[in-house]
Length: 178
Image (cartoon, rainbow, N blue to C red; front, side, top):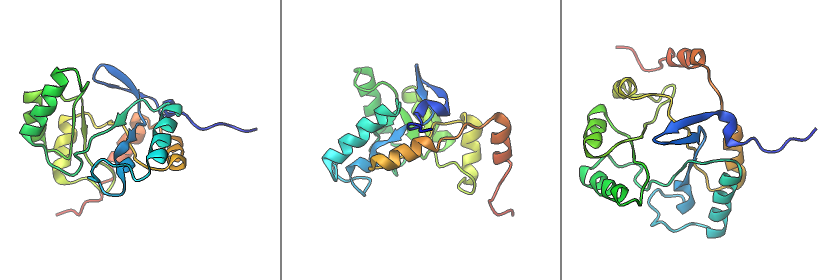
């Protein structure tokens, strides 16, 4: 028996603003080359287009196009993005790598529909616990790649965790104890 690729919908869905999206999305940062700020130029345009097309074929309906990974929230930048949202050029805004205070600061400017922080076993920092308490910690996976085969592997590797599974994983704290 042969089977086709596993679709992104197999991981379940999540409400993101007014949209329902599959829990496995696609981070498009790698399409511009190996560096996060590679001047927006694809390292291989034909391959980049094929990766995006493949993502859509696999049912990915959340593509993160943010170019501002690795920078902290800046009010002026978020304000400019909020203006683009008001003009209808951006549908939703999210933030990444933020503290609880920065989430509040951003929400004072415009609605925030998602928060992307590094969150995994052994990767949480003390302040992340505060962010998780202030924000729902069931965020969407948005792995990035510039390779269509790796994209299919990312989508196929999606897990559906029950509330009990998540509780067991959350109980594992690998930070050094004082």
